Length: 109
View 1 (cartoon, rainbow, N blue to C red):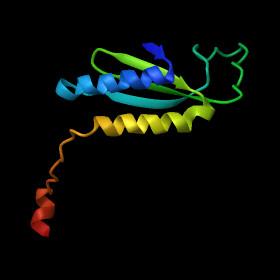
View 2 (view 1 turned 30 degrees about the vertical axis):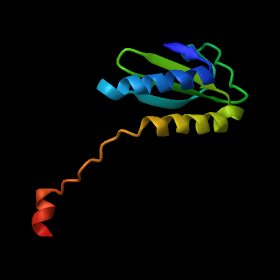
View 3 (view 1 turned 180 degrees about the vertical axis):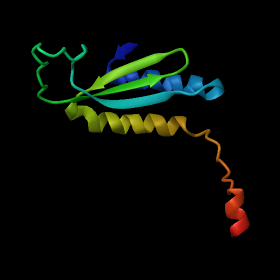
């Protein structure tokens, strides 16, 4: 997995969404990140220190490509604004799904 800066992540995400538009899909996950890249220690060992502030770990994954970035607490609002613009620009080719009623509900109503 490639850890990128926030701006580089957004540009790579744009390229990833454009390449996934023709033949595949991509997923994006967001989770709280405490800065530790090691597992929790076993019982009897001293615990890992608690961070002063948590960060966001954002990952994007396609079939063949993985991207990630870490967003600091004070930069989350600015990043999410840019992230939403990238998503809105890449979702213009979505197909509308037709809703099919269940046969039992259709028979009753």
